[in-house]
Amino acid sequence: MLVIVVPCVLLALAGNAARSALRFDRVAILDGQIWRIFTGNWVHLGWGHLGEDLAGYVLLWLLFEHELPGWRCPALVVLGSLGVGLGLLLGDPALRWYVGISGALNTLWIAGAMLLMARRDWLGWVLALFLVLKLIYEQLLGPLPWSVATTGGPVIVDAHLWGALSGAVVGAAVLLSSHWQTGRNRVGGQV
Image 1 (spheres, rainbow, N blue to C red):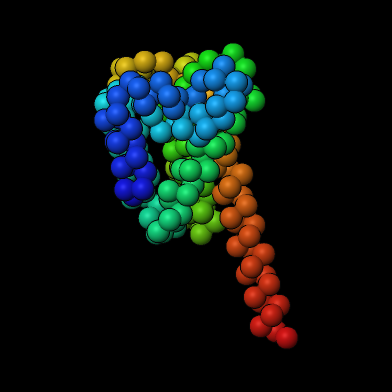
Image 2: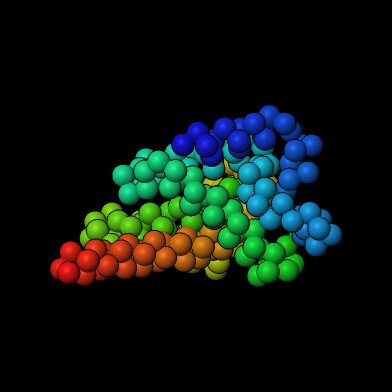
């Protein structure tokens, strides 16, 4: 869990200089600062924004610690950071800047829910439904009412969508790989 929490807190302690140097900034990325595709997810608008995102991460980590033990939860957040950054760069050309890890948390959320669903655990279906309803609300009506107050700035709801789409792709890949490996082991055991 600390693999995600510690860098976010350290970057918050570094203040505005770190945020300016690392945020997703379309002009800077197009000028060659490609690290911002990834690092923009790890800096936040302020302590309220960081607190909300880290509370979400801890909750998701607790929900999925059995399905995604060890390095798997942080790895999904890292993959989600890339998916969100690339999604915003390629799919949201009007967006100038972005900060926060909430989009990448949606990667973890849907991938974890998919793993639960594959085990026929009803909680996976509930979590997936809640995320889909949240995404629909955000796309149609904008950010959830309390999120603007706690972040201290604009909420880029498309980051949540790109994160969820990244999670669906990664979750499907994990499930297909697991299915393929299980089938391969069955065939190998019969020979």
